[in-house]
Amino acid sequence: MLLNNCATSINNNLEQSISNNYSSFDQALSVNKLFYAENKDKNELKVDRELILEALKYEFSDTKELNTLITLSQSDNLRPYGKKVIQDLIKNNNLLLKQNYASLNFNVDEGYKDLFLQAAMNLKHLKINLVFDNNQNAFIVNSDPLNENLPGFCESFQTDQLNSIEKAIFANNDIEETETLVIFENTFRNKQSEIKKLHRNIRTILYTDQQYEIFASDNLGITENLVRHKKIDALLPKININNTPRIRNDVKNIYFLLSYENAKGLVPAFRYNYSLDLNSYASINLIENINDVNKIVDFESLIMPVPNQFRDNIFINQFSDQSNIKNRLIYDNLHDLILILALKDKGIKNAIVNGRSGILFLNQDQCILRELPLKRINADGRFMLP
Image 1 (cartoon, rainbow, N blue to C red):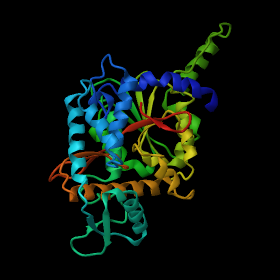
Image 2 (cartoon, helix red, strand yellow; image 1 turned 30 degrees about the vertical axis):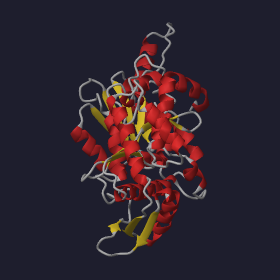
Image 3 (tube, rainbow, N blue to C red; image 1 turned 90 degrees about the horizontal axis):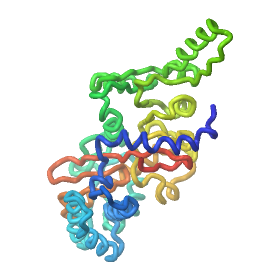
Image 4 (cartoon, rainbow, N blue to C red; image 1 turned 135 degrees about the horizontal axis):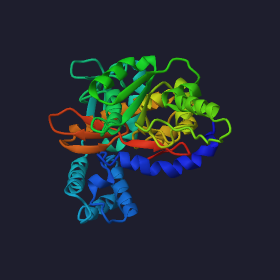
């Protein structure tokens, strides 16, 4: 497989194809949602957006940041949605200036208590008092926090991250005569059945234990193309016919529902050898068992739902080298649970929060909605906005 030789061409060619696929919708808190972006300096708007995202972590350290937001809220570049995001943020910050402690009771497994304490320390500016007990008023956290709904959340992290990625994949799939390949292993059999019921133009392919490159070429139509070329070559032996393998032109996306063990060979077999012009997607399940985050670079160009704080200081410095990404995701979810409950305890009724597990939408008397930003892996193994 020509991994290194293809890296530059992927970076150069993929930008346009990805941006075109995202044109049918805007992600939460995107530049286009916050600002009137037409004929504007996109780099300047991205800087302003980063300022908003940073403030939406609810980690105000001084008044300078708040004053900058107040100035930004008066900008003509902001859409009404963007203005409301900032105005709500400023109003909520005034509520946080109160000195009262948030006392939160949790009934949790013993194994998660250290993560709760770690999160409370990282949120110490909110003055949180944690109590662990099993009384009837305690918030119950089940033994599988990634796959179970945390208290107050509409869905589990697992469901939210799958919904986030599939919104992008299938945005135009049902109305365009193009096909999405869903490459899945047996663990995801129920998920692929669900996808087939909900969407048109889907071709699902079970991967078992075939050789990676043979499996990829067979299912992209490369093998059939090569066989046809050999037949023609045999009929016309004196004519030199150049043949460049081409994939089926009705394939638009590839969606990988795989574990890391299969994906580390199969994804490069598809992407680097045959399908540079296709958008390739995966859920975060694909990398959750990785211990060495540098191995993420093996999936360069793959698009995935990833929280904005992925690989920040907490991610890198507060976990041992033996902690896999799944452990960090569990921490992120527990952190966001404490953050949301503390904000509600302090009187905040409506807020958008740039959480560690995704963008969180807090609305009075409603469960917490969550959307994960979609990002693609660059040549350095970093997640970048498409």
